[in-house]
Length: 204
Image (cartoon, rainbow, N blue to C red; front, side):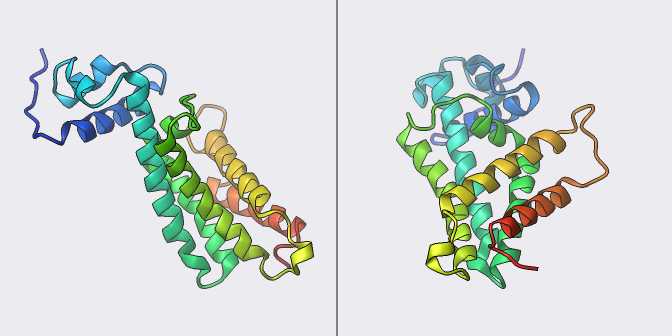
């Protein structure tokens, strides 16, 4: 028997989000149940329905909060392109890896749970905010080029996002057979530099 902890009115929603994030980290985004999330939060199996329609609704809230924190980290890393756009841009790559390492439950809810981001307006806005930081960074990098020579900023942002996600999946989860003598941060930075140089966004 697990002793249920009392909770203060207004805290249950966040307690369930935090419990679900921990469960996702341990079991993956497909394996957790609403009943288990309630048990971890110290409440009855019926309590989650006071705040969430069901399992998917709770999972989407975990992802939404993850995207908001993710966007905050990217914004702090970019710092409006200071002191130089390239160094600021590369800091965002490290922020991406740090978030995946520090908040794996939220990261998996965001990117590996199969939820429909477009089907939830608040979740979609949170995701777009994070994407918007990368978009602004790509636009800032391109300002040194004449307008007619600038690559599409959204294309650059999406490619860097995909590259960062790939490095996380291949090298940052401690999976057997994925060991490398190169640190994930080094791999991401070198790949980003090669890509940006190929587009003419940076020069030697």
